[in-house]
Length: 413
Figure (cartoon, helix red, strand yellow):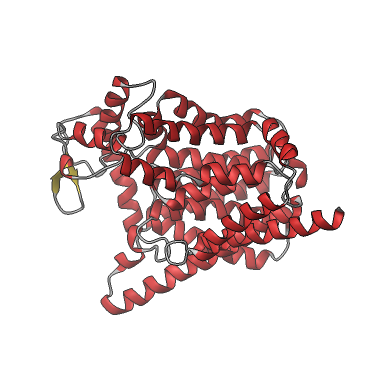
């Protein structure tokens, strides 16, 4: 029996390792990612003991919420008119059902191996960031345009997805910090990886994740100081490091302009006479809440919610600054740019509350691993400004990392 458990644990680990590696180049090669998920499912089916798995599943509130979350999306087919769009959305989100089901109903492998997977993920992200920087440099040598290093032009593996790449990199930065500050092994290599990821995060200029990284770094530093009772010198070093980071962010012209545009957008929320709007989110959220208010209980269904938003935005005469000129906002095809609002519009208030539960509840439980809470903090801020479940990169990251991290406990450190 022990040999069988060891074998299944090994295969589970290999399947999860394949998923982690597959996340790196998911836009180009699907085999490691899809293959890892399939193998994970086959092992789960092949190890039988379904009663035991069902019992384990019934005790895990997070697993039940994931299952309920997907099922209400499935149920929205009953009132979705655009069924072809609905089926595509359900296919995209199916790992929100499968991965928590496979990973939270059985003991996959040891805590040590779970942390090893996080190290592999961070190493893969350093490799991805290095690849991005290298190819941007090659593009720069051809046309001498520094824009090759900035925002949507920087990601070459997650093409055109700076928000998702920033989520991956920001989380990996904290994994690197854990290796540097807590484990204190291979510090030079991890510090080099940290530097590459930090440079990439700044150049990607995702304002949500720059803010998230600064905020969560500050909170983590305060918690760390309160627990460890660090010296005044250590505190000054931590504050100095954050101050230098802020200085670097504002020293890079393109990134500074993105931050400056944020203040313009915030001003637009107060003074509507300023028509230079660099980000349509303020208007999208306004119209999103208006259509949600019309059907707050069940929503419009996964096939119709974006269509209803687009129809509502036809009445919006706001202008969007695209970097060169103002263009009408109602000419653009847009999603909700907020995962909580999008979920509410799609499947109603229950879906919104279930998603909120997944993000907020772990902070009220004892003995949760700090890296899990950091992941949730980054995810929460990202969800506020982007519909992260609109892309495979968002669905898979959440569906895989959440079950993996939720089973870690603080005493692992």
